[in-house]
Amino acid sequence: MAPIAQTLVHESNGNATVGAMGKTKSGKQLKVRSYPKFDHLEDEREYRKQHLAAAYRVFADRGFDEGVAGHISVRDPILTDHFWLNPLSTHFSLIRVSDLILVNEDGDVVIGEEPINAAAFAIHSEIHKARPDVHAACHAHSVYGKAWSVFGKELDMVTQDSLRFWKDHTVFGSFGGVVLDREEGRKIAQCLGGGKAVILQNHGLLTVGETVDAAAFWFMSLDKTCHAQLLVDAAAQGSDLKKTFIPEEEARSSFAQVGTPEKGWLAFQPYYDEVMAKTNGSFLK
Image (tube, rainbow, N blue to C red):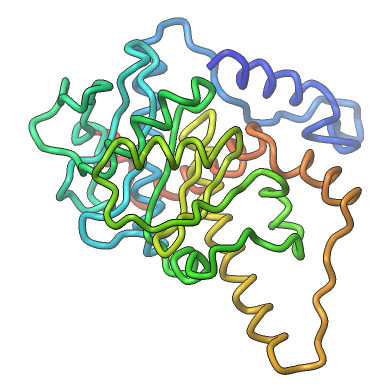
C-alpha cells in the first residue's frame, strides 16, 4: 500500500490536489486528507476492514443490495493472498467489522463462521491473483448498471464524471449464467486488464482499486454514469438532439484530475464520514 500513500502525501504537498488554492491568504498550508501511514500491518488490516464495512453500509444506502447478490473484497495486508468479504446472508446495512470473513486463495474460510458467496470467490479470487496492484474489488447488481449492461457497450465520454473511466473500462461481452466457475472469473479478470472497471453483459458492474475506498467510489460513480448515459440516449432517441462528445485532449487531461487512485480514495471519505455520523461508529465493532 506504500505507493498510494506516497502519492497522496506528495500530492497534498504539491499542486496536483490543492492547485492554486493550496494555501490560505496568509500563506498557511491547507490540510488535505491522505491515506494514513501505519507503523504496524495489524493497524492497516484494521483500517482496511473498517473501510470495507463502511463501504457495505454506503452500498446499502444507495440500493446496491439485492438478496445475497453483490460483494466487496479487500486484500489482507499481512496474508496478501487472502482477502476479506461479507458473510453470505448478512444485509449490507448491518455489516460490522467483526462480521467480515477472511478467505484464502482456495476459498477456505480462515477467519469467520459463515459461508461466503460462491460467485464472490470465483470473481474476486481471480482478480486479486491477476492484479497485485488491486487491493479491493466491488461487484453489485445496481439498477442503472444492470440496465446499461444489456447493451454490451462502453460508456460515451459525454460528461465530466464519465471521464473517470476514459480508456479505463471494458465490457465483458458474454453472459455465462451465475459466475460459479473460477475459469469465468479468470476471463473477467482478463477482460478487466489494467483498468478500473468492467461492465458485465446482462449482469452488472465491477470496479477495482488500490484501496477499498477508491473501488467503492468508482462503483458509485460508474452506476451514476450509466444512469446519465441512459437518460441522454433516451432524450436523443427520435429527436433532433445531438450528443456532444468530449474531445480526446480534454478527456485525457481531465482524467488526470478525476480518475487517479488517490482521487478515488479522497472522494470516498465524505461517505465514510456519513456512515460514522449515522451509526455513531457502531459498524466498527
